[in-house]
Amino acid sequence: MVREIARHLEPLVAEALADTRVVGIVGPRQAGKSTLVQRMVARDETASYVSMDDQRVRTAAEADPGGFVADRPGLLAIDKVQRVPELLLAIKAQVDRDQRPGQFLITGSSALSATRGVSETLAGRIERFELWPFSQGELTGRRESFVDRLLAGVLDTGYRSNLTKADYLERAIAGGFPEAIRRSGHRRAAWFDSYLQTVIEREAPGVAASPRTAELPRLLRLVAARHACVLNVADLARDAGLPQRSVHRYLEVLEAVFLVRRLPAWAANLSQREIRAPKVFLTDSGLAVHLRGADLDVLNRPELALGADGAILEGFVHAELTRQSGWSSGRPELMHYRDRQGAEIDIVLEDRRRRVAAIEVKAGADISPRNARQLATLRDRLGDRFTAGVVLHSGPDVLPLGDRLAAVPTSAIWET
Image (cartoon, one colour):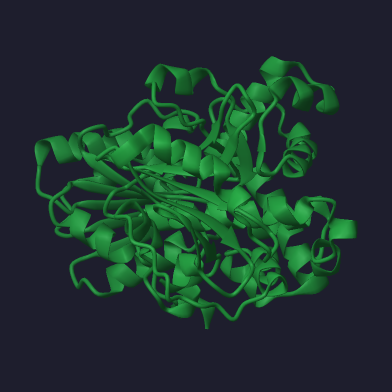
């Protein structure tokens, strides 16, 4: 069963509880946060679990937040804490009085700092993790290390894949949500429709910046049409028939409830990163495909896909790397690169040691040295800081493309 699949973040959460007073797990609704927390609580005889979805529990917490969290003998796991934001201030008071580690494990389906009514972020007292829908490695029972290996300059030239472009597209269309993976065809589409309705009706109104949520479904479809593209807010606002300032607020809401993620631009100068346009992605490739109204037959035929296959596969790769970076030892930041001359690189990884790796995503299997031209330019500019550059493709083999450069089958992300 899908719900029995181990999550790669679990050991890191357990490690954090050993020396941190509060540990938070945030991420999209239905990504598996409750299942993970309940599994961890079941292994600890002193731990207890409560959910703010339970009306009786929520009423008690709202009536007396301080008493609700006070003087617990062991770990208290509070699921969906964003539904009673007053609990965060009570937790702060409790852990300031008692500084033992491992007192609280909290989850939220919206960013806690963006939640309406939250004045306390528990800064200095909390370690926060993002839990996304399943990665491909989690689905196959393998802990991926592709990000760490790439930043260490390791390219497995002997790797060979048996997957085709259609195989990759099938994985992208399914996405990573447990319930969506169980379904197919119109039943998966029905689940995505219900999921979006629930998130927009129940999660979005709790975000502090939330304007009228009735506009969100239409704006989300317009964002899906720009999936894996550089974000032009003026263009998006024109198509939506909304003021730009409203679109900015809507995007903040969609990010806060983990439906949309903006990928910042990479630049050697940190101040330049702030002013360059980000790319925009739906956080799950299956959700992006659903909102675009696409299917395998369309995406696997270039004359019908009209480039959508490349955008969907780039989004799929972005989602996999986002998940994997959560347990990467280097905790890299994901960015994209675009210069004034129009040169682009799909994804750039930079870790805390300022090591840089770069990735281009190609939908097809035919690769030539020209596909690595921008990677080579970045390599030559950065020198020793540049660890590796890869062109991910749907063919079977690893192909050397020059110093620290190679064309690599996309499945290497979760199989190496």
